[in-house]
Image (cartoon, rainbow, N blue to C red; front, side, top):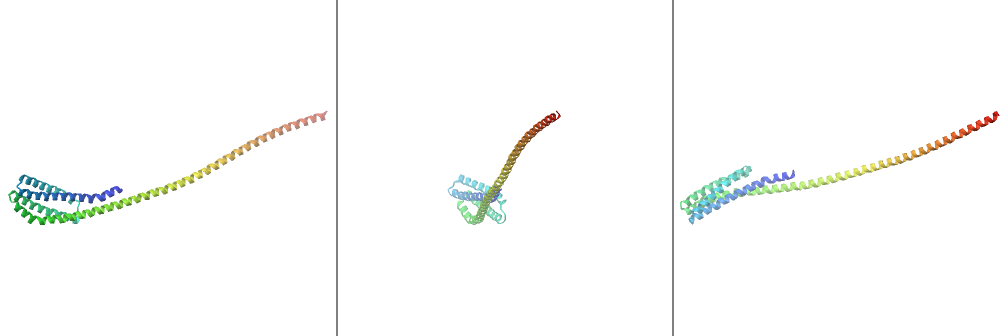
Length: 239
């Protein structure tokens, strides 16, 4: 259905952008902890240095897990950019670990110089594919949003069209029902008229039958009178 199509259109780009954002957060945590290690090594705070190194390693571990999940969602050029980012991040992480060793040895200045010389270019190499991935995922998400909006508009117009069709069908059904009702009323009227005519005819037939019976009765009486008269006349003649 429409909701499922919109969800599928948005789910992929949104999930990739979310994972990429989480990966970038872990990389930034590594950088922050790496700088803090050098800073606290300069002021001789070994406990805090140890805490920052632990944060650094935890962020790298989490970032690797996120990158593994993200890798399964990317294809083509995007997957290549992620591999480049991971490769340079791994190299930069090793540079940072060497810097931490120098700080443990009480050489924070040397460690800082080593990080600047060997880590700066790698940090830039991490940022370039990272920003390219962010841009591409943002474009994909914007495209998915536009697709979802277009699908919603199509769904809206389809709903309007369906409602219009239902209204048209309802009008035709209503008109058909009116025609059928008119026909039924006409037929019922004709039947009622026929019934009245038949009732009138039956009344007329009954009246005629009664008249015929009366006439027959009168004729029988007349015949009897005639016969009596004839018999009387015959009797007189015989005398």
